[in-house]
Image (cartoon, rainbow, N blue to C red; front, side, top):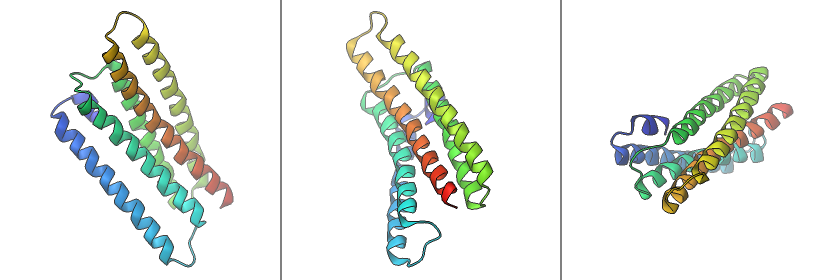
Length: 177
């Protein structure tokens, strides 16, 4: 998503790649459910595993939704605010990845540190969204343009929020371990 907004080249192909990732995420989520139904004893509570898979899928879904809106709304050029939100989203996803790697290795202190950073980044995303919306509604802009960017900004920020949801699940599971 971040590369798409920064490079802004061959947008339909980039959005198609994001859709493929979202499809693969759905496939993995379904596979997790299938495996859970076949496994008698799991390393974590079944509910925690399902919640984690669902929250990770939610992140990908929101990224896919934001990318789709760029094409659907026929965006000609991304705004600096959209680029900034995508940068924060990229950093947040990287922290989710790091937290999951640490979790797998049972390095719970590092998991908690990544979760704190995810929360910090989510707060930063909230601030960028507030500024972007304030700028969007200040001045004489076309109403369609306002609606278009409001929707895109909010969808990007929702993806960041979903990363924080993953962090919350990891924090809860880490406390149980």
